[in-house]
Amino acid sequence: MEQREAVREDATPQSSALSWLLASVGIVSCGVAFAVDFHKASSAASQDWSPFVLVTGLLLVGLVANEDGLFEAAGNRLARLSKNGVVLFLGAALLIGAVTAVLNLDTSVAFLTPVLIYTARSRGGGEAPLLYGCLLLSNAGSLFLPGSNLTNLIVLGHSRLTGAGFISHMWAPATTALVVTALVIAVLEHRELRIEPSKIAASVKPTLGLGLVAVLASAILVLVLPAPDPAPAVLMVGVVAIVVRLIRGKDSVGHVFEVLGVPLLVGLFGIAVALGTIGRAWSFPSTLLSHLDIWSTAAVAALSAVLFNNLPAASLLAAHAPTHPYALLIGLNLGPNLCITGSLAWLLWIRAARVAGARTSLMRASRFGMVTVPLSILAALAVMVMMG
Image (cartoon, rainbow, N blue to C red; front, side, top):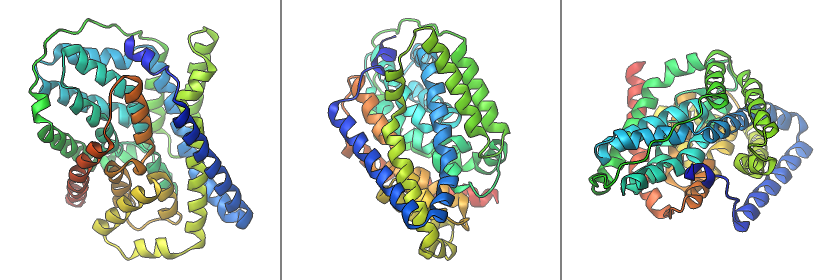
């Protein structure tokens, strides 16, 4: 219950100001793009809208699932079953990977970060591997399904690929990236993982109702429907679920608005449309990618994600159908682990950790990324090549 209350805390004035500043930049950028070239901006917006609609729906579903105690119960179960820190971390890695795959990496970091922090505290220590692991493993696990990361839908917006079709291509590279990232964190944080539990966590029982139904419905929709069809359907599931909670007086519009991070989503969408317009008007990005192999494509994608954020970078680099779309996704999804500028997940992670009373070090997280990113990218690409 404590971690569910934590995510209800409001953002600080500073973070709110930054969010609205980003929203203003996005709105202005988008407006300029439409004013300069309406046709190309419309094309960019057409490619970018579905990922943002989908993540809104998934965040709503995640909010309902969180309020029903599904994440808290899963973390509590891990704490009670884990005899040592290594087992707890491995279980947490599987939980993070599953939530990221089904409900998106932003949902994962927003709701699992406080859960895992309290899970570690309920055992008496070993918080750091779970805290930093939630961020890094969420990014690493975002290659499983189209909805796992907005970049997946942006890059593959040129093809109507179902979730089942996507996972048939990416399950092996995605699993490899998740495993490599988990192993690196385990090695670097081996001292923390050796901490034996000093107490037994109290049992927590979830509410098996609306949240579970919404999660299952969203997973089925993402798996079965071809992109971009799942976006409005999942949004409808999320809206219906949250409206039910609002009618029952179990939530507030202000809290929902805060959890969604509406200004951040608006800002990133506007910037993505602007860069997508540039990518359609300027042939250099697509020409460059057409001359690169999969290894260089992933490297360029990772660097672009750090420079521009992975969502606008995806819109820029995939303005035209890329030559190596899956290699591009590997770079865009794993590269953000290098730096806070890489993905929205970093900002959500910082906020979630803060409200749970944990102190985060961006330098420490980036040091993890400097090791995990090249290793996970190389390993994922190697597996993809071997799989044909």
